[in-house]
Amino acid sequence: MISCKNLIKDYVEGDNVTHVLKKVSFEVKKGEFVAVMGPSGSGKSTIMNILGLLDEPTSGTYLLNDKDVSKLSDDQQADIRAEKIGFVFQSFNLLPRTTVLRNVMLPLTYLNLTVKDREERAKRALLSVGFPEDRWNNMSNQLSGGQIQRVAIARALVNDPSIILADEPTGNLDTKTGEIVLATFEKLNKEEGRTIVLITHEQDVANHADRIIHVRDGNII
Ligand SMILES: Nc1ncnc2c1ncn2[C@@H]1O[C@H](COP(=O)(O)OP(=O)(O)O)[C@@H](O)[C@H]1O
Ligand SMILES: [Mg+2]
Image (tube, rainbow, N blue to C red; front, side):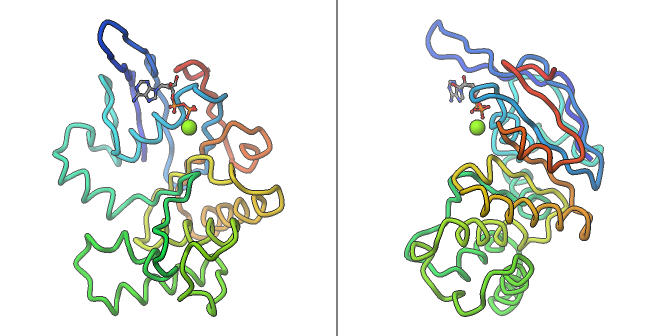
């Protein structure tokens, strides 16, 4: 499903070049649950942003379902994100002073759906992650960390994505809440067949995946 070859990412500031990714190559098969693990600063988020078409590599190829997607226009990339990819970030990125339901509906803005359809889908996504129905109309800044992350996962699922990209999704959670979130990812993978790329610096978290890709200093090791 995902095939990356010789991905290089350089940042240039004046005379200073930072080589963040140095020929990164790996594959992820459809239906796999893979962890990308490495210490802070090793390039994990850079990899995730490239996989999610939020950033472009300096060079190298990225095939998604056999199609070279890194050279598409911004609009074409946005379409692929809207249709195929679900994102979960460490910092959750929910809109404050906006209800749970509206937050989950957000990724559907770019799809051609009625408000009623969008609401139905958001409700289904919230049910699937076990988010209590009596809080759907709460503002997102009135929730606990664990509840916020469930909303973030529901939001990632609402477009029925074939791939879920999660960047340190348990980084801000206590161990018990983190376990619940990881169990949710396992269910999405094993029962629903979704492909998952989970980014983490923690071995305990990575152990939930079927396979671990180790990253260090911008290299796969
Ligand atoms: N916009 C940027 N400009 C310069 N350097 C950056 C930029 N973004 C990230 N980096 C550097 O790239 C390296 C990898 O960052 P990142 O992919 O966020 O690592 P990780 O997610 O593994 O902690 C770090 O050394 C970081 O400082
Ligand atoms: Mg990171």
